[in-house]
Length: 282
Image (tube, rainbow, N blue to C red; front, side, top):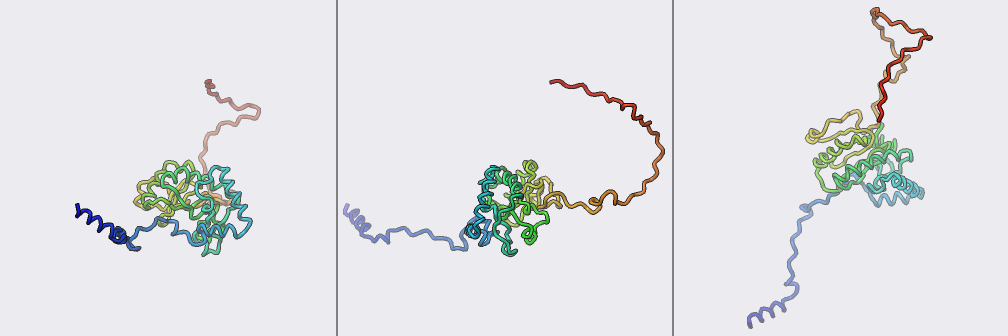
């Protein structure tokens, strides 16, 4: 009994610092797991959220533009699919091109983004989780500087480049998006393309797919048409196709053999009546 009381006395008299449990060792920074942030590879300072606030406040008329655009998305029932301010991002190379990091597209282009957002809402986010737009509308001069196709879907605001916010491998992302695109893309005229790392492209211009890794592409139907990549409409027709028929060279025709022709009825005689099928009653 005396021994137990003595041990209790020693415990109570020990300094508190000596009784604390040593903290668990932490990994050095080089060995700590990286935070999943694929958008950081494409977003520079000025095109992030603080940059958006600065751009928004830099010109008083921008508030009205953004408000009108957001109200339009709400009227089309696609507001909130992704944050509106992210939809206003221009091109990743905006700074190199001397352009603005954000831009409200002309009102004539607004309808083109509606079906794209519907497809993102219906068959992208449910499959890969939340996504962040890293590039949307590009005005003609910026599109040219950024290396976009002459009739890029971005120029008409039908396209959005996205990255997934939920951790996923590139291969799994491709497979997942390809399955949904094969089943539902044609209904939305959805285009699906892949770029470096985790960046992918969605538009509602034409049903097509491109830039898939070969191992994944083998598991998807081959619907790619290279001439349609990130473009709007069909390829430009050749000169012969656009030349008026009166100016096309006339090809000599071989003489046709004599054939018996049926007599042409005179205008006074009515044409023979074709028998009509009996009407089907319900």
